[in-house]
Image (cartoon, rainbow, N blue to C red; front, top):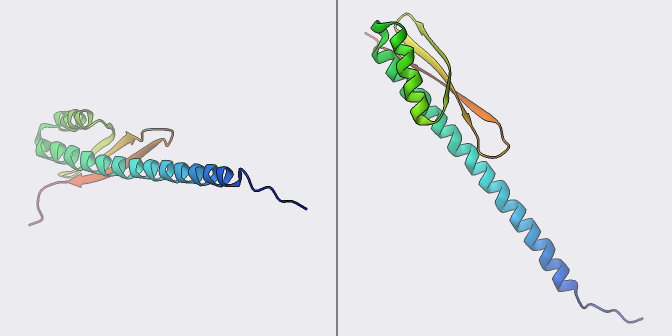
Length: 112
């Protein structure tokens, strides 16, 4: 019985290339999620600081948080105060079909 091995290397190369491309795509997607998570956390921190900086101005405080959130490319979901502490929550869309991520932050005067 004769064995014809012609073309086997092509099949193995195609399988290896497909696996490599799929792995690279997964790593790029994971990287995108991580970057978006960090951006959302940074935006939440800045929005909370903006709101806390205007705490004595009432509704203007959350408007400042909204403006910062918009500039950072996220959506402000929650802006509220517990005494003098500003609590904010933002959402950021992950590029691709991953959905969105949320981040929370709290800012207020230093403890005495």
